[in-house]
Length: 269
Image 1 (cartoon, rainbow, N blue to C red):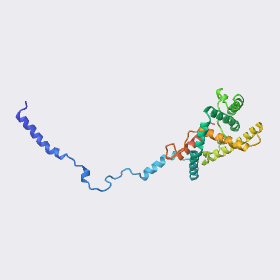
Image 2 (cartoon, rainbow, N blue to C red):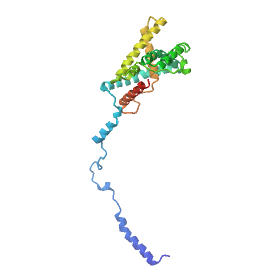
Image 3 (cartoon, helix red, strand yellow):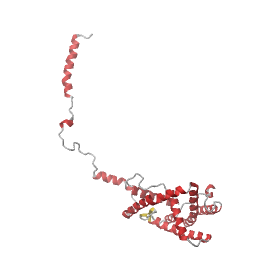
Image 4 (cartoon, rainbow, N blue to C red):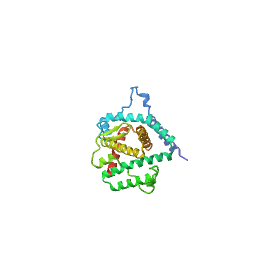
């Protein structure tokens, strides 16, 4: 048992603690401050230095784009056209035509493009690619039933993907300013010239095919239908959808990705 003297000492110690406990009570500051509007000063407001740093972080997206304002308008137009016309037509196309039929359309279009690959591989001095495209054209046009079946790929002969724009790049022609083409989308001055060259080659090729088949009437209408199918077939293979990238800088991002991809395309030719 504790002695009386020890109990007194404990009581005295407890009495001495009471004033100390009273002094550590803290009053709510909200109850003592007079209303002054903002009680806490803003400490993380963007400063000119921070803004300059953010701009510097996006410098890697810079591409030579002197026609930026016009290009952005065309980009918006393409997005509206894609939403209002292209995608609904594409949905109808994919609904009406089953997957095997669409695959046959893709193969036939690719087979017609072999002529473009042969010409451009020749202009680039790529003998192996030239022979490969020739083999594919002969095999798929005969065994593959006019290109509907890609028999050559099953035999291990891979398709050569090249274009007039690639040829211009191989020849050392710089891409020039970035440009957004109506309906076609991102491009450059060099690639736009290449697209014109590809279109001229395709026009000559199709006229040759019509001559062989004996088609004399309605070539314009047939050509328009063929161009529409080509466009739908190409769009069906592109998963990109406007304004769904989640980036507030989509135009800059697409411009950067397109330009970088084209540089890599030219390097691997």
